[in-house]
Image (cartoon, rainbow, N blue to C red; front, side, top):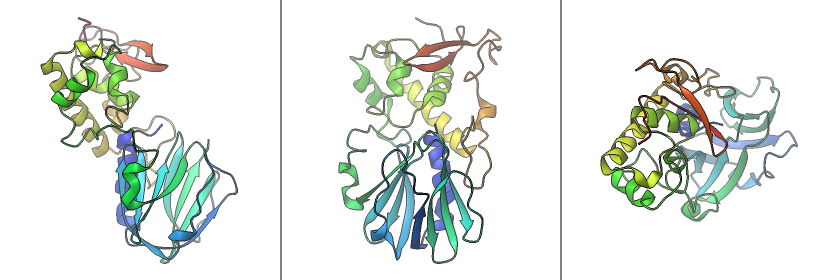
Length: 273
């Protein structure tokens, strides 16, 4: 599933191509995504003001005060193509602009979903009301994380993947951040000390920033808007490297399952205290 760096990469790819574009038509394959598609008619003849991200949602802000909210699900992709280019397999929604460009949404498994909301009411939308802070903004700090987790008995890995606490720290980036912070993923969240919380926040920030710079991580379906993969997978220290030697100490990387998700760690560099 595309995580925060992948969604940010898509936003960064779309923004220069469709900002200011006037929407003139919307068509679809006749198949619903995870939920039925919204009525796009109020967006016709309106210009896209900008494209942003909140958590793992893309936000298409239109100048008349409405925002199209889009979640990529497991396999969603956006491509900007000219109107004359052939429709591809699994292409379910096409937004056509006045300049002849189209924004095509492809989704093999159709787990993505779309909503429409008044821009000034976004914070109250049901998909956003319970979301935690953004990890790349100043609200996310060691003190904040310590305060949120001081009574939590869950593991630190599962805690930092909880979108009610902090958004977008997906499975890959949680494992990589914990490795860099030298924190065992199965430690109880409330048992970390102040220095460890601060280190973990710093490494979550750096891992996500580096992943965005690399265009995200392509594991299976994710590609950027230009069709190219993201390259952060070449920087993995632990994720997907079970039984391979740690790049720091040469001990074999271990894999466990937490909350139904695979976790990778080095038992030497991330000792369980």
